[in-house]
Image (cartoon, rainbow, N blue to C red; front, side):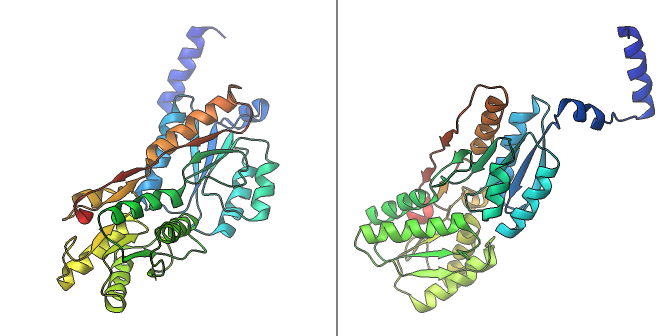
Length: 305
């Protein structure tokens, strides 16, 4: 077919609004041009940033993202992974490192790049782009202790569902014990994702049961903002009476009064590095399993000064 004929056909197709059906071509080439991604929450800005970074890194290759929402449920993740693999993605990106045994088997036998993100798995399935949630919270504990605070609490969610939140809780406990301090000021805030309201309710329980608490680390910035507003509602000064810190570097934490101390996990960088890793594997530049560690940043703001 001449270039002139091809251009004329494409022009007519465009005028008619015709969309090319790539199914037959994909069957011949064994390429589907999409990457499967699972995330636990669709309304969490951090995961949206990760998906954005991933999408930007893949679009130059013409790869699109097919998104699955797990709701912090590893059984739902198993169901989604099976469905996604039936569509023969070029690669699959998972949030977190805790999966059912069947999910692990499906992924190991899939024959495609598997990238676990937002954690540093002890038993990685394939590739990893993430960080230690426990170590990140330990740095926040160290900061508060250096500021002269000893009676520190942790507000978190359902440890059985939010594995990253559970790791942050474990990091808090380990750091407090290392300093020889009480690590039992633990307040459950409900089923993840933890909302501002649940953070406020947890803070109310903390103030009523352990009013001598000097500082609080929350599992997320949203729960920390809820805790902050509860203190303001009760006339408890922050950071005068109690310091508050969150996790995630959400925009609301920077805009609140006082601004919230937090941990920046660089969610977009996680996505962009995962995209670069996928392209390296598909192009043969990366053969064996790769672990890319993203180092979170401690952001000390007004709420813990």
